[in-house]
Image 1: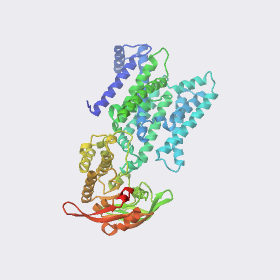
Image 2 (image 1 turned 180 degrees about the vertical axis):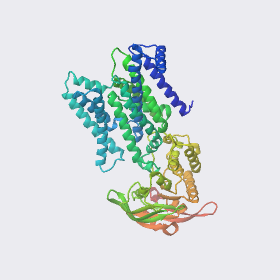
Image 3 (image 1 turned 60 degrees about the horizontal axis):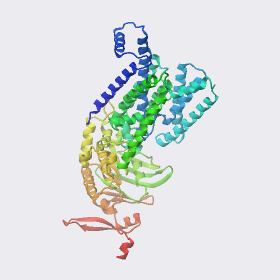
Image 4 (image 1 turned 45 degrees about the horizontal axis):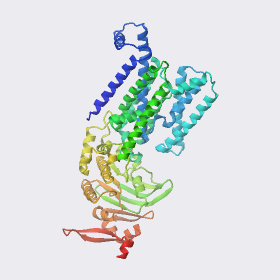
Length: 338
Length: 268
């Protein structure tokens, strides 16, 4: 049955809402849906609340759910943007070495004993530095910024370089205190999210999503190749630079808060394609909503499945690997009949 | 008008073509003839502003291609490349609608609007491929892809269209349809610049011919004056002859005969 595209987007939004509600209910302390509704009603009426459950909902779970939505959405949308930009459906936001740069930044901050806020900042700066070094490398390579291959190669160089620096820090780190902290950070977690964390996240992510969503059709045209896109009237250089800059800001903001969360930027765009089709003008908002819903549920799973919290990077990787097995089987079956 | 003045083009500092002079007006069809690797596509890319000329000047309506904004340039000249591939599965309609971006841009949400869809529908109708509109571009034949890309260029509604080997992959029926389409474009006042290896096509449709041999323009002018058996034989280094032929209705056509000497033919 064929459903209108706007209907599918509305359904995705409703799924996000349901995921958020489930995530509010589920946790080590189970809170009844009715009680959650009462807490929200009290907030709307402006009544003071001092009980434990309202603190859990409003100060712990709600910020965490909002952060999961923003971060999952940002990572998935960036995956879709990069896949179109690099004309490769197997590309993820880490292609330009951003995750390695942010990982190194966070590890450096942890090694230096900086507080949480400064750790966020240094991780954010590390991600930006990695992508900036990629852009500088491509410039040095003879003003060939428009060439995807050069960007990918420079991304590999930056990724390897920052991974090596990260390994040095891990090797030299105190194995009793610092090393576990670095390793735990690299596995990804939303445990450190607070209400105040949400403001910078939202300020960076929401406007970037709106701007990038407006590039959807131009990204479709760019998937025909640079030369063709230029002859069709797309300002290829401008779209590429703006997309990379915004995607970098969003991913850095996401990664610095949560640590490295793999696979969301790779397999959620494929799920969104399955639902919405291949047009970026619809795929980008769909990826954002699907990524948000997925990370909310993955976070819910991570903190509720066993008595201690599983790092969310492990959960997303397990689900991602499972998904790709299904994808490989589907591709294999399809090629059998072609 | 597209004007080439002493243009040298190539890759880096290596010139593939030198001293290219010529002009093409709206409503004219100019064919570029030359062997594989003669630099025809490179010349196209230079005209389209995708490569800077090593020497000389290319102007479109008096200004160099680089001085136009991308959408302005796309409204002046469309491009039909030799091959188009996309890694994602878009429909034929989506592909053709890309052409309308030049004239109408996108709506406030960054999506194609009503005008874009209307323009794509018109281009599909002109190219005669409306039944294909919902098919996936990755699943149609090479010849159909060719027609889709031509329709995409038509959706740009440009003054000129540069076609790189438009006859490649087309069956005789579609070749005939393309010739009719070219005739239609000429009547609409659209200038067509195309390269081809089919001299019979040049004879039947082109106003002007530019012949390339060994990195130089060896002949340039109207088809009737320039195209000869000697010229074709020297370009392609094989025996080629232009002859008259009559169809069933008795109408005379100029055709090109290429002597292909296979061992089997020699035995006969």
